[in-house]
Amino acid sequence: MNGSDNRNGILDDKPIAVLYLRLSKEDIDKINRGDDSESIKNQRLLLTDEAIKRGFVVGDVYSDDDYSGTDSTRPEFNRMIEDAKLKKFDVILCKTQSRFTRDMEVAEKYIHRVFPLLGIRFIGVVDHVDTDVKGNKKARQINALVNEWYVEDLSENIKAVYRSKMQQGQYLGSFALYGYIKDPEDHHRLIIDEEAAEVVRKIYRYCLEGYGAQNICYKLQEEGILTPTEYKQSKGMKFYTPLQSECYAGKHHLWNTTTVKRILSNEMYIGTLVQGRERKVSYKSKKVVVVPKSEWIMIPDCHEPIISKEDFYKAQEVMKLRRKYSPVSDVQHKIYPLAGKVLCKDCGNLMARSGRKGTEYNYLRCRLALKSKNKECSPHYIRYSELEAKILEGLQQHVDEILMDEKNLEDIAKECRPKKDAAMQEQRKYAQLRAEYEKLQAGLKNCYMDKYSGELDEVLFLELKTDYNRKIKAVQQAMEDLDDKVRYREEIGSSEKQVKELVKKYTTFLELTHELVYDFIDYVEVGEKDEKKEQEVIVHWKF
Image (cartoon, rainbow, N blue to C red; front, side):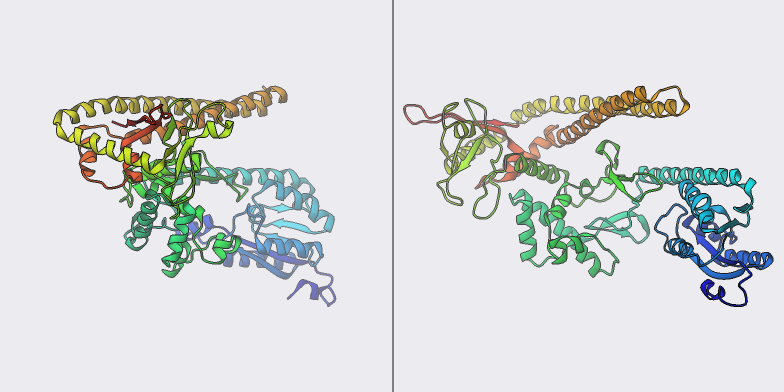
């Protein structure tokens, strides 16, 4: 029977009561353990009986299934509030005040302000909440506070459980990362999906060949390869991303640069389980913020890698150089292998590429000379094909010399050991920064506690808060920079065996590639031509 119908009938003298029922996820867990006292069915029976006892006419029933008491998007709750504003009923019956809401602000707003103004009575049957009882207000406010504490504690407990599972190496994502699937025998473990993994390998291969993210997208599109979203949906997964409707690439089922860059920078592909990169602003909000990398949970060698560490870090180097130096691309839309590696011998500035794309008439010239119109430095012109030929010749000679004598390998390995020592020192420094970060976080927390206890006035609190946040941000940045450096050092040659394998890998080569440059060349210096038109080219090898 609808409340609005009752008002004009023979039941006008009886108050019209509506029932509000709610079941949340934590309640479902209780039901599964045998306690069905929170079920929607039992709530309805309890409230219907109470309405009959009190002589109310039951009007509408509003039921939110699987919604939290702090969720502001509950559809039935919001429908009930709109009906209350239209004065369609006189009484709201809930099992407890917490069924109505666990948010203290919402409770105060409706139970103590809006409903009394509308002439609506609110009753919580089990906890004896009744807005018609004046002496009941303090108890209601205490209930609201306790309910909010409960939700906050529950939220913290759930986060702690999830974090513990992440630290144990359990994958908690709703869907597996593209290139992987969830193990049918253990959904918290990832195994390789060969069909998608081959596309991931292809993306890395294109990157190491010098293609930028946009041109990788073009190549994948030309080859008719499904985007990750399309691929998952083709496998029957109910996977959806806002990109499908919000951006051009999503609407037209095209690969986009964001997806490619994310794949190229995700350490999950080298077997490291990376989680905890985002967090909710608070337990009351669905808004998420990005977490600093220093706070991510990263478990190395947690699942089978799709990409080798060597190729992964090469890709990071290629992308870093491309972002930093934005070199001119050739006719095939590929970044040239020496991008960001060639410097002017006299001023130390980068050599910029000029000339027609895709021809042998490409030149490199000093950027400082270009910008200052040759006032601050001379051009140091060198044809790119000539420079590449010189470096190739030098590289072949360098490799031959290393392979010629076993002692050379031993000497090189010794030179690499200091790099390994440096990596260990950086790891120790990272641990110190981590300890400092935790100390600063604890200090900031104490500031908040001292403020609310009255030991700190507002002005001093704001000064301390600003200072702590500034220091925390600086330490976070230092940790991220150092973390990247440590990981990079771990991948460079640190043993005789690694050096041997690397050198023997390139016993023969016909052209200069990104991999060759990455593995062997630190940087190249180009001098100005002398009176005899001879030009010095100095290659600084990595070992």
